[in-house]
Image 1 (cartoon, rainbow, N blue to C red):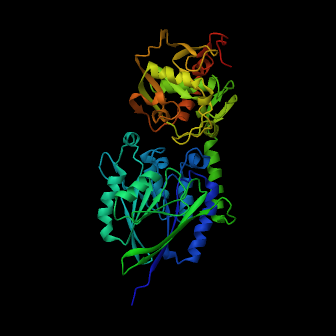
Image 2 (image 1 turned 180 degrees about the vertical axis):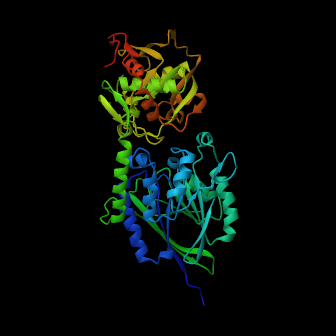
Image 3 (image 1 turned 45 degrees about the horizontal axis):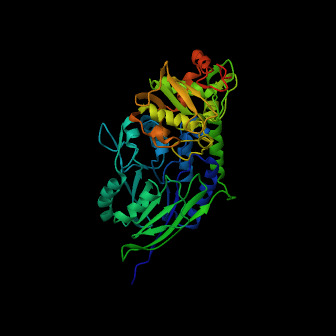
Length: 488
């Protein structure tokens, strides 16, 4: 007599990025599946980047809202994404996860530098039982090693980590799942190169797979971004053959779903109120408005460039105006308003950069195709790149000249910029990845400054009356049509 097939449903999300408006729909869908299937046959997983500090509910509650809503939705495991791992400090993550998360967080390629052990609030892997099946879970995140080392973590090569954990778990489990916050290309490579993995559930690159891929015997699934879809996989396991004999998957649209979980709606409203109170705290009193211009010099852009220069102890400060979304009115400035105008989880950094590379970026910054360039990823939460805002230098421009020849002179203090000389530049981490201006990715001796974001730098500047006054002094002047000495 043949043994009956053992069946399992896997529900999965990834890259929610604090789009809380989708969570009541996702929770309702998960509940509906649990009502249709025996609860013991349903496994619910998140593949990272549930949290995003640009959203007030996350920022105002230090992501407690995310964890409590995930608890209410019934998640059974999560892998750490870069938005969790890089935008909160390890001490904060430890305290809030231990107090609030009712599900394990898996970090198969994360260890503490000081102990060489997995942090005590994570698991290196997890084995659980569903539908009589022993299921092994491996969870790996993208290895932004230069960043993680500053936070006291070592994040190892995910492929090597997965290989090691597969060797340990495969003999002990019936089904082996990798929760991969690595991106589709790496997931495909993992399926091609590593044996013993039944299913890879992916995220990080926001890819949507309407049905699972099958590569070298391994299935790959992913559910897009922002909670627009939930992933739904059904499989059948033959205990006699000790293998999956059926697997069907799909993604279920959530944006138009009508059913919502009222308990999650209530919980979300509670945290919206709590976050509003937290973000109402005043950080500065402005005596005058500070204008912003994405396509020209402005006081608020100058103020941020000066703050980054000072924060990084550099000769020159460079930042794109598109990091800021709006100008500021006079009067009280709250944490919430600061979040609205500067939402991106962007960190300041310092590097050595040649005068030639600085000049090239300045020339590009004067061109419409760069000002209007949309940026995707790298923590950017704006609309367009905008112009370069600068501090520590003055730039003379002739706008009538051809592109890449419009800069007449650049002065660092009183001296002309030397194309051969290396300068100490304070800027933002996004540029080091080649986003926006390629020449700014050529810096050497890069020092990333974590955990502060550029909005923390701006908050510091907005309390300095001398810095605010100096932000109105022009850094750019047109030699054909001389600019006023002050930017209003």
